[in-house]
Every structure is written in structure tokens, then in C-alpha cells.
Image (cartoon, rainbow, N blue to C red; front, top):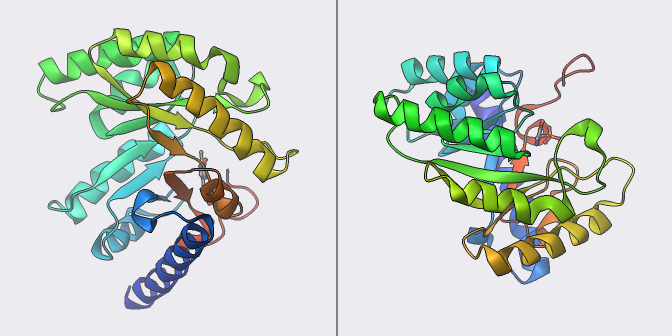
Length: 242
Ligand SMILES: *Cc1c(COP(=O)(O)O)cnc(C)c1O
């Protein structure tokens, strides 16, 4: 376990250096960029070590895996100030479960999902299973390809209106994954433009969750306030994993 802790500490230091360097190059303050560790496929013991190293924001992309890991982490580190983020595609029938462990859902991409999450949040608060509103990001589809989830850029405004109509959801901003076939700089440029447009009507939507292991520098150049990093922190997930 000590070896793993040292490995994670070194990786974390390296990722923080990349973030600092990208911020410096972009003339931004490193404190403007939140680092979220994507722990998918890795055990709760790794999440616990990341907490020991000062990480607060952790993310998962599969609801079932996340429920179990969040519960395990609560046992391992009952006092750690963890904030779990859901960053993967979410089916409406998982809304009830996700609001019990997630502080934030970054993958809200349809009015129907927003509605289901709002209802589930209200019920969970009434039942004493969560303390307050659910933070949400709208997942944007930069190339408009519906196959991979995400809301087309020109429909974000309407989705934001739906989210803010509910009292249970707090609209924090936008999340996106750069399409594989697109240059990341171009993709994040488009995203930044859409985010600025959204903020005209929803000034509270200030979070821009963009950038992963391979493209975090380009994302920071284009205004990312939250990078979601898995591989560079925890290692390779192998070919069979998502
Ligand atoms: C897996 C995943 C990440 C992290 O990807 P890496 O390339 O391993 O850093 C970020 N965001 C989402 C939505 C993911 O599913």
C-alpha cells in the first residue's frame, strides 16, 4: 500500500505541474482549475489514498460501480471531505440511486433526465438521504453526434432553462469530452463559445469541465475550470475497460 501511495503521490505531483504550466502559459491562476480524479475501474483503496493526498473531488462514470465504491470509501475514510461527481451516461432509472452518493452530476443532457434528477433529489432530501440540492453540469456534445450522449450546443440554453426551473438542481455550468476526430483546440474553442453564450442568460453557470489526460492543456487554454483526469493519475485501464 505504501508503494501505491508513493506512485499516486508522484502522479498527482506531475498532473499538478501540468496544470500549473498550462495555467502559466494561458495567463491564468492555477486556483481557477479544479482537479477531479476519475477513479473508474480502480479500487476504493486508491480513492482512499487520493483522499490522504488531499484530493477532494472524485469521479465515476458508471452508476453501479460508483455506488459500491462510494460506500467502501465511507468505511475506509469516514471523515474525508469527499465530493463525488458522476461523469458518465446516466439512465433515468438510476436517478434515485445517484442522488444518494453524488454531490454533482456532470452528465445532464436531456430535460427528461433533469426532471428525473430533480424529483429524486427532492425525495432524497425529504427522506434525509441527502442534505441539499444537486449540483449539475450540462453535458454538451461538441460535434452534435447523438450516439455518445450530450446535448447539442444550440440546445443548451433550453436545457439550462429546464434545469433552473426545478428548485432541486443547481446549474453550475457545462461539461464536455472532445470528439476523437476533432482537434482538441478547435473542440474546446467551440465549447468555450457555447459556454460564454449560456452565461449571458445563466450567469451562475461558470464551471467549464473540460480536459482529460490527453488534452488538459488545450482545455485550460480555452478556459476550463475543471479537468477530469484518470489515466495520468491512476494508470492505464487496459483495453477492455471503458
Ligand atoms: C474516463 C473519463 C475521464 C478520464 O479520462 P482519462 O483519459 O483517463 O484521463 C474523463 N471524463 C470522462 C467523462 C470519462 O469517462
